[in-house]
Length: 207
Image (spheres, rainbow, N blue to C red):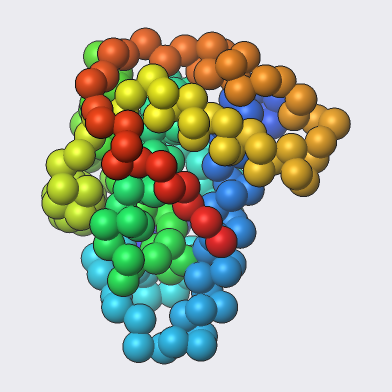
């Protein structure tokens, strides 16, 4: 990336659980696609791929974004929805260790602009993500076109993804994350009303 990233020093206790949920799932997806990449070296590259794998972990990177971007926790759920849609619409661009960081910072940026009334500009997100403003602008445009500008997320879709993320964490840490999906969604404070067709978004990111 354009500049070296600092590891967030924010304590784990102050982080919303969605950070742990997302990072756990994306780590598995990334590792699985890394294996597929070695088996299929002709896989397509994109502007989201870095030349080398970033040294910062997915979990630490998400913590950094949460700490500095100051967007609502619900933005991270919507960002995950966008990542899922992107991979469905761009099957030749799977999430792997070379692309996951740029896809994350871009999806959160786009989500914050759609979800929050107040958000930082692209230059600030570029600094948080460790890339240049020019690259951040390019990634945003590429991501939006990759999504086909399908930005709406229904409450039902939001709940479905909350359920999926929590279920994945429960499989690994059954005693630590025992809240119901309804409680999780309420804590994440979904505060927008949408009118998207639910039938087009039934898949989730899968390993």
